[in-house]
Every structure is written in C-alpha cells, then in structure tokens.
Length: 216
Image (cartoon, helix red, strand yellow):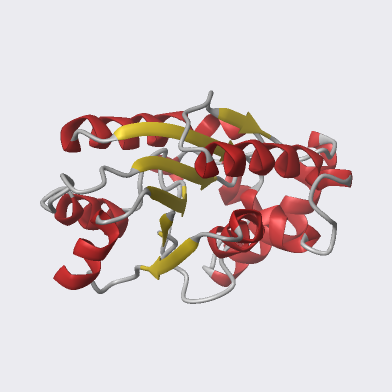
C-alpha cells in the first residue's frame, strides 16, 4: 500500500504535527510511506501527481482560527486538480489545537470532508486532539500510558483503519491530564511567555480583542 502523509504545519521544525506523524508511521510499517512537508512553497506538479497516485492520503496539521491553515488550503486547491482516477486514495487526518478539548477541531474536519466530496474521494477517519502544545513536553511518555493514553488508543484505531482501507468514526480526544493543571502549565510556559515576547502584559490575554492596544 502506498501512503502519502502531508505535514501541514507552518513550523520548519519541532512541530506537533511532525510529532504525531512520528507516532503514527511505526504503526504503518510494511507499507510504502511518503512524507511531504509544506510551508510557504507549493509542492511541484510532480509531487502532487505522486500524492494523487496513493492508496491512502493522511493530512496532519494544526488548527488555525478553527480552520485549515491557509498554506494547506492553497495546497488542497492545487491537489484537487490532479487525476484521482487511478487509485482514489482514502483520506484521513490528524488535527491538533491549543485548546484542551479535541472537539474544537470539528470544523476543520468538516472542511476536509467537503474537499473529499468535491474531489470524489472517500472519507476515512479523523483524530482531533486537544492540548497540542503540550504533546512535545510529554513526548518521553510512551503512547497508551499516562497523559498519552487516549492518544495511543486513537492512533492504534486510526492505523488499523488505514491499513485495512476502512472508514471509522471520528475521534476527539484530550490528554489524560487534569484540565486545571493543563491550563496552569499552559499559562506559565506558553501563553504568558508568548505575550511577553510580543510586548503584551498578562492582563491583555483576558481582554476583548477590540480593547487591546497592540502598540503599548
């Protein structure tokens, strides 16, 4: 089976999407796996044709404003122009977001499903995982254990469906970790440092957008 995996993260390195791909690929051993990373540059016509000539197509990307990142959307528009009459790959995706709840990814999943309808491809399954920023910090924890228990279980189900070319119910997961501790750690190690790096005070994170002075 030929499997094409598209890393739709805009990050050059150390992205959560890349980590999720690293978790998935060992479970797909024995197949012909091709991984593509897209950033600012579009894939070539040759690469797009090679992706179209796959048995399974997997998109891994972060949620951006409850939607698909713009550079991935541009790639999907170009990919839809390819000839899918040879193999008609089944489409799967793994989406992560910065919220605790994996359900937050449902709109982006619906967008991929609409793309499948327009390209006459069969929808397979999606994993929507929350707390995406947390996953690299717990990468030393084995899948299926501790805070990675839900993720390991979901990836196992997804990989089995991919290998058997079957569809499955979309899975929405959160880490096996208390929400209040996740929020506290995310604030201290992610949100507050990012606000400071962009010249914002902590209180600005709790203000409505139209009341924030971004030039203070």
